[in-house]
Amino acid sequence: MFIGHLVGAELAAALTPHTPLWVSLTGTSFPDLLWGVTVLTGLEKVEIDPASPLQSRIRFEYYPYSHSLVLGNILASLPALLIGLYCRSVTAAIVFVLASISHWLLDAIVHLPDLPVLGFGKDVKVGLGLWRHGALAFVVEYGLVVAFTLALQPKQQWAAILIASFVFHAANANSFFGFTRTNPVKSSRTYAVMALVGFIALILVFDWIL
Image (cartoon, rainbow, N blue to C red; front, side):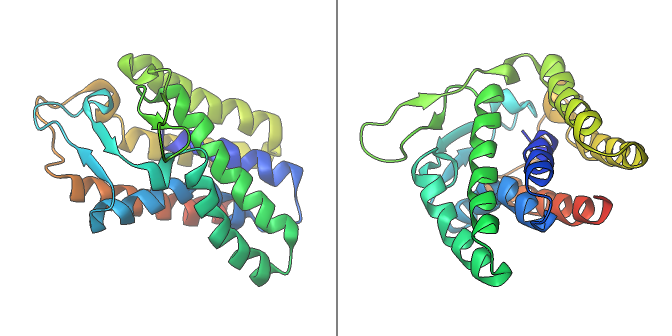
């Protein structure tokens, strides 16, 4: 999930309006930002299918540090501590961790059963597998953004949020619909860089819009 993670930040902002928005935006993005770094450094592994661009064909082979519910969010407490100190706010630290947890919960809807729960030991992996149904996954992910935006944001911001979020979502449309016969992303490193760039852009754009 990509643009769908915006809803975690929107909810956090609505519940804690005095916490800077960049805190929740960065929290919801943290697992994929960490994942980009761990893939580039070889700590975690993903396998790209050169024959297909579909998200359901990507094999997330090993990513306990960035995408496990327990270990991943223990690690999220480290930047949360720094953010809490910087903002002089315990609430900001808690918001960051809860936003990171929301990332895992939303990913569990779309991922195949590859999301680690513990991140260590005899682990359990989960995922409802909505990515198997690309068109439906595309609609559901954007539908979540629409629903949360209309419910939580003032009317004067609806157009900017929904247009910007659709542009981000459409940029990822090939992974839902398979418009190309082969995968234009040729390596796991490229995929990791794309994740880093995409989520950094999401943080900057929506921190400005909201």
